[in-house]
Image 1 (cartoon, rainbow over the protein chains, first blue to last red):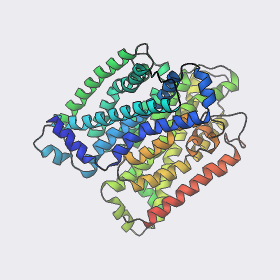
Image 2: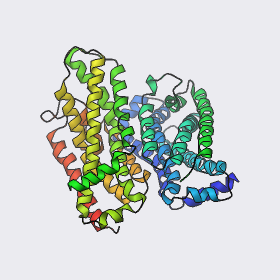
Image 3: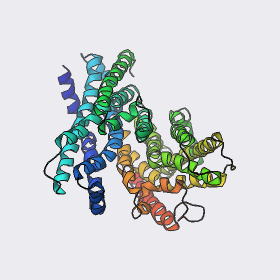
Image 4: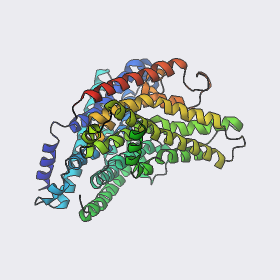
Length: 237
Length: 242
C-alpha cells in the first residue's frame, strides 16, 4: 500500500520543479567545486599534498552540508505544498487511505528525493576526481560514507521539516526553521555532542561517524512518530 | 500608495512573521555574547559586531529577504488575491512598489533588532568602552541597503511562482555560493548576494565613508543589480496575465 502511495506522490511531482531541485543541489555543489578547483588548482593541490581525494571530499563536504540542510527543508515544503496549494488535503484524506499512508507517502517522497540527491553527489564527486586525474585508487569507503552517513544523521531534520510543512498551511515558519537549522549547523564544531544540528557534520568526520548516523536514525524515527501522532489527530482544512 | 502600504500592513499584522523576525538576531546575540575575544576597549566592540554580522549576514539575512517576499505574495497567491487586488483602481506598478516597500520595511525592523542584539551582547559582556552606536548603526544600514537588489529579485520570483518554496530555491541557489565567494578577494566585491555580509562586517582597509563597502561596489553592484532586477520585475508584473 505504501508503495502505491509513493507512486501516487511520484505521479504528482512529474514535470514539477521538485525534481530539478533534487538534481540542482549536487550539481550546484560540484559546479562550485569545479570553479573552486579551476581557479585555485595549484593552491588546493599543494594544500592536500599526496591525498587529493581526501581534499576533494573535504571541500565537497563543506558545501554539501549546508546544501543538504536547506535542501531538505525546500523538498519537504514543496512536496507538502502540492497539497496546500490545491487545497487537496481534505480530498486526499477522504479517499480510502489511512492517515498513516498519507503521511508516510509524503515522508517517503522526501526521503527518496534526498537519497537520489546523495547518490548523484556521489557519482559527480567520483567523476570530478577522475576528471582531475586523481589517483585511480578511488577511496570507495570514504566516498560512500560521506555521501550517505550525513543523510542518516540529517533524518531528524527531514522528519521535522516534513511534519511542520504538512501540518502548517503557511510555509514561512517551516522554511525559517530550516534556514535556522542550516545556520546553526555551520557552528557544529562549537556544539556539544548531544545537539542534533552537529550530527551531519560529525557523520562526515570519521571518529564518531557511525554513532552520529545511528543517533540520527533513532531520533529521526522518534520525530516521525511524534509528527504522525500530531497529524493523525489534526483537523485538516 | 499610502493606502496600498496600509493594506500590506493589515495583511501582515497578525501573521506569523512577528514570530520569525527575532530568530536571526537571537542567534547572532548568543554567538556574539559567547564568542571569545582577542582584544579589549573599542576594538572589542568591533569584534562583537563582526561575529554577530557573520552569523546574521552570511546566509540568514539574504535568505530571510526571500522569505519576506514569498510571505508577502502568499496572501495574493492563496485565494485569487492578485485578481482582486488588481481589479481595484490602483496601478500595477504601485502594487509592486508597495510590496517591495513592505519587504524592505520588514528588513529594516530585522536590522533594528540586530542593532539591539549586538548592543545587548556587548553590554552583557561588560565591555568597558561605550556602545559605538554609529558603527553598529552604519553596519545595520549598510546591510539593509545591500538587501535592495535581493528584495527586488525575490519579489520577481515570488510573483512568478505560485509555490512558496520555489522562489526560495532561487534564493538558495544564489546565496549558497557565498560560502566560497566571501573568501575571494577578486570576486566578493562583485557578487550581489554576499554584499549584505560585506556591508555589515566592519573592515579597516577599504570602505567608502562610514560604509564597509567601496563606492564602486555600492554604486555598480548594489545599485546596478537593484535597477536590473527592479526593472525586469516591474516589466514582468505589469505585462503578465493575472
